[in-house]
Image (cartoon, rainbow, N blue to C red; front, side, top):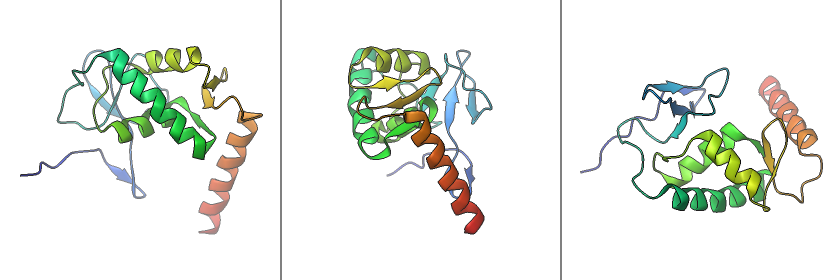
Length: 141
């Protein structure tokens, strides 16, 4: 029997991002990302019991695949895309993921926590153009 996974409220058809703080409280989207919080896939299950290093390694592989198509993403969006792909609640924090991304030569991290592949020139410009296109599409659609 399949269990229903509670993923959080949907706003305009898009599921809001979940994270769990150090005290164990689960939140949805925040104005400021708490770097010591854990990205969450669902509300029912606990953190993965897989070794943290193995999960981070898998997450970096997934991040590389995601950035092949997206080019640049902020840390929060990339983390939640990774969690969607992993389909588990990782046992690492945003800070640990960011540190791994910074240490891995396959990725480039700006001071504003925009993540891209090193081959992407001017990731901030690409990101802001992408945001402008999204806003324009919303206004016209």
